[in-house]
Image 1 (cartoon, rainbow, N blue to C red):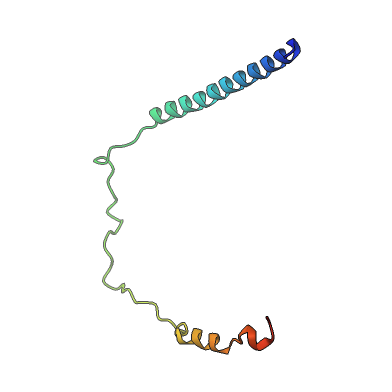
Image 2 (cartoon, helix red, strand yellow):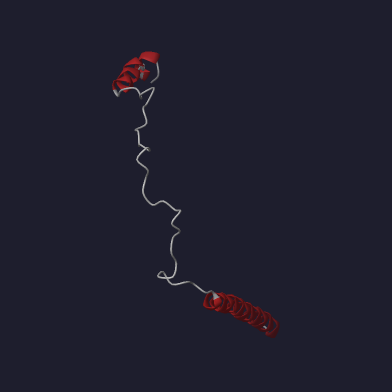
Length: 96
């Protein structure tokens, strides 16, 4: 291996190391910024949060749940058997 080849390999190794360290620092900075933003966020405790009296939690008696009626029910499974019976085997068509 010539000294020029060794210098080229050394250059690529150094560039790869630099790219890896800068990538690691970039994502570490983003993680630290996210942690700072999460720590500054104030969340009220569940005991402090209360629902308004205007919000109804129960269903009024006038509302009834009715099932959805199907107008056109899907065809029975017997239809599948008739389509198979109508198919012509390949031997009848002259295929080898």
